Length: 237
Image 1 (cartoon, rainbow, N blue to C red):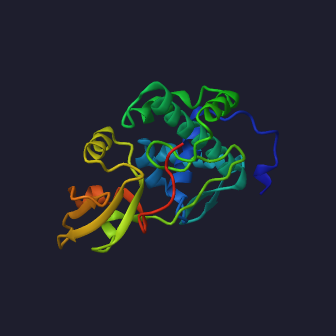
Image 2: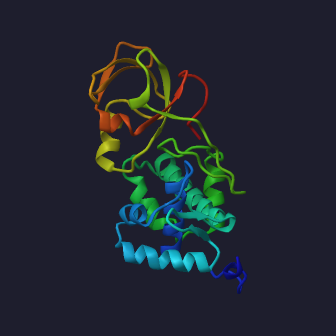
């Protein structure tokens, strides 16, 4: 791509970093990021997204496929994973070292991730013992830019009788995170699906092989990402 062969890449702006992260999240399961999806995620107007996408394409950070959307180039993916590592290390440090609750660290990390140095991030990661997952169960990219990919199932899709381990909570909404914590639905919790009401009704689970039951509505069950079998793995640092 000729547009990518230009002057050396200048430091990325905060806005560019946020756009690259959004493209990564929207394409993490394959496919393309559309203008409308990005506008919704970033809470900006679609024309602003279109303008930024043109700039990122010209600098070789994304690739645009007509009528489908955009994907990160290798260069763009490296930049996005660098920011995601910063964000998730910060979230983990804030919870483990500074006593933040998991429902309050996202906004704090968003403010900090653009300002801290790579050296500080690596010192934080080292102090934590190089954690593999953040407080919400999301994998932390390595300093080399690798990220773990797991085959996870939404709780809403699990079969009755299935044994699961809750691995990731796919929301940053503070109220939902507080509710999940109150219900004991946090990464590492083992579940057994005991019932599901028809017509998109709630799912009933037992926690940790006990008699403690929880009824989880369909909307919330879609946010709980699980691994089948309910064993193995470690979501801690």
